[in-house]
Amino acid sequence: MRARPIVLFLAGLLIGTVLAGIVLGLTGSFGVTAGFAGVWLLVLGVVVRAQPAEPPVGPTVSYGPGEFLVVLRGYDIGQVRALLARIEAARTSTDPALRASVAAEARAAAFTVVMRGWDRGAVDAHLRAAAASLSS
Image 1: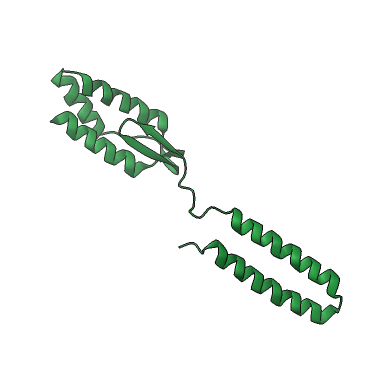
Image 2: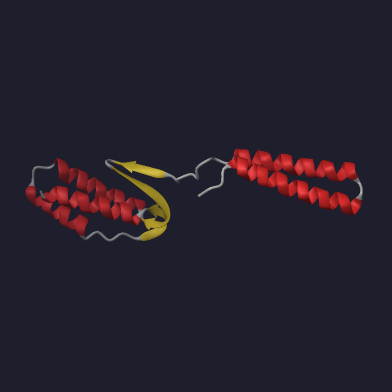
């Protein structure tokens, strides 16, 4: 769970005040130290407020009914798109042999795992559902 920005701001304010007090007690130069502490607190407040409330999800690619998240290590997007195009062609076909062969291909699909590919679990689930719809 992410801390709320106001909590982070107040924590930074408290820590900055304590540190400024320690430095003031050691140096005695009030003006310079208070100025530096004020600048750092201002920077901390701006940085905390600039952060989004929720972490970004990541890029997604929409292909028909499935949306696949691009992950660090996932299926090769080109290979998956090629199979999805064959599945879409088979869905619109009235040839039962074509539908059966593409359904079998979807069940037995093996893709290369690459950096920044489509989420393997989501693609596998989509292919299982597509194979079931082609078989019925």
